[in-house]
Image (tube, rainbow over all chains, first blue to last red; front, top):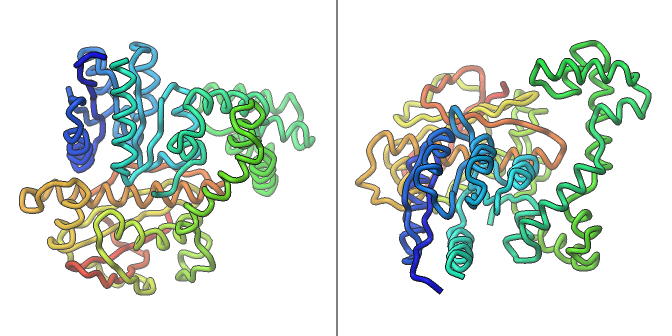
Amino acid sequence: MSDKKLTVLIVDDSRTVLAQIESVVAANETVEVVGTARNGAEAVRQVSQLRPDLVLMDIVMPDVDGLAALRLIQSNNPETRVAMLSSVGAMASKAEEAFRLGAIQVLSKPIDEEILGALLAQECERAQS
Amino acid sequence: MGVKFFGQYLIERGEVTAEQVRAALNLMDAENRSIGELAVEGRLISKADADKVNAEQRHRDMPFAELAGEMGLLSEEQIDNLVQLQWRTRLRVGQALVRLGYLGKIRLEELLVSYEEEQAPYRIENLALPAGLEGNPLAPFAIDLFPNLLMRVARIATRMGSGEPIAEPPSLPVQVSVSVSGAPGLLICLAGDEEFSRHLAAKASGLDPESLDMEMLLDGVGEFLNVLAGNAMAMAERNGITTELEPPQTEVCFESGFLFELAVNIGNAALFLKSI
């Protein structure tokens, strides 16, 4: 076990959602938000610069959407673990595409804070083992 | 709780891993037939014509069925039948997981029952719609899910009036819309006074209501509409209807649609729906 925190990048075009996820993450002392992005292109750049352990990313965003960004992230930085968190996450077509592209989980909105908390705990455990 | 894809439900419960779902999706890809393959097998078009459509797809980003229809190779009725056939015969994720040995058959049946029970609040039955919205595949789900999601996201209790053709735009200051494209699609607009919108945005973000500026109020209402539209789209997709969601807009056009007055316990609000 190490004391290293799980580093997280949050990607969503909604300020409301960024604030909500940040508050869930803040409740876990072993997780640190290292950046936020408002669209897919910004997310791809930030992943290369910040090398977060985990990316929590929306799907429907302007310009480069979450699935296109996921494809680029997995191609440029395949070690990055990405969970999608989206209002269209319950659509089988979107969820299936995300899993095919390498997502580790697809959560639908409204955000279930308990499920998001469990995902963060699981990723912390994985990062520290 | 919320509308969810069965694979998500299984992962959330720890029944399978994301890697196992990915393997199941690969099996589905290998076994499920495309609309083009079904059309050739059913002798609705020749292999040569199917190849022409595939070649055209390299230049134009359109689904096979839509393109074949445009090229005069398939009728609308044939396309509808093919889409239904594909939907009825496709290998589902649960079945694929059983085939791969990641889930037992009996366990799958148990999980399908509990999944259906969890999803039951989101199922609709015989909802009466205004004449202009009848036949719209998304409108019944949007109307049915609205009170449930408003309570869940913001603890706002609401009763919806019947939709009336809009006479004039609602005089409420916060107005946001989302468009769902499809055939037909749906424009969903939510208008609220400051009290309603502030409460909704604060509950959705977890922030202090007094700290929210107008941009944040619009953002919060827009995010709620995203959730409403996304959940309605997921329900419609289970009936074989594919749609796409556009990000929220704050320029709302209240024309030739239906306004649903809302009796809410916090502030004032109205919902507007229009087939597009």
